[in-house]
Length: 279
Image (cartoon, rainbow, N blue to C red; front, side):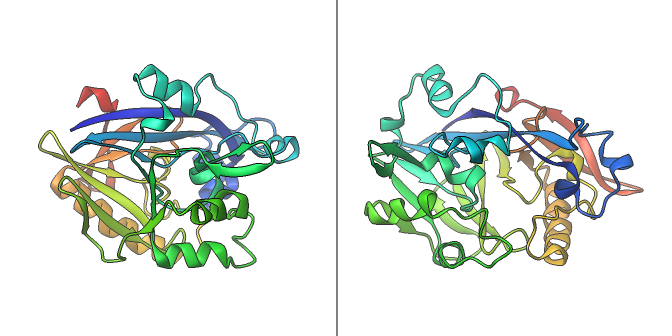
């Protein structure tokens, strides 16, 4: 097995929304805001070579939306999904599986592209993986979350016939080296791949912990549908991660790719940070 970081660029989101009830005077120290109160966030995907497959976890925001849409998010940075794959010696047509942790636009936008007047899967040779619970939640969105579930990012996957669902059983095997953990605080049935790699367990955090700045348990995003559920899930996963020395892979941290946690007198806190290729 080989793991590769796939950077797809940066975007900006409101700092208050990203940290919920935590005062700006606190979160601004770890994630400084600009004059518009916006913080920079990564869209860091993961590529897995395993058992003859090339598995891409999440796809970034993509580039098919209109100028008005992108004007809200201030996309920047030199990396893109295609350029990062090319730097690793791959093309999007090499991808065999696209694993979507959840269907918010900054995670699934790159899964679909425009081909003339048509919207088609960006990875024509891949199986796309979601789960029934989350898919139903996304295609029938609640009023609060529907701005994050864009039909043009989602429905073409199903229409192509390339969509498959995994069972919503926590800990179920995706492959011999990848198990799926489920969390429900951020959105219904978000999937976190737990990857066995070089005798370590690497947990892809998606939006359960966007950055190292979100490690204290109460630091929960306003975007989360069920924040008290997120609190419970963070406690559970952080305790497990500290005890078993999991490597946490961070999708949105603008600086840190990976980290570990430790128990302290103040609770679970950051232990160390490092790049994936340093493992």
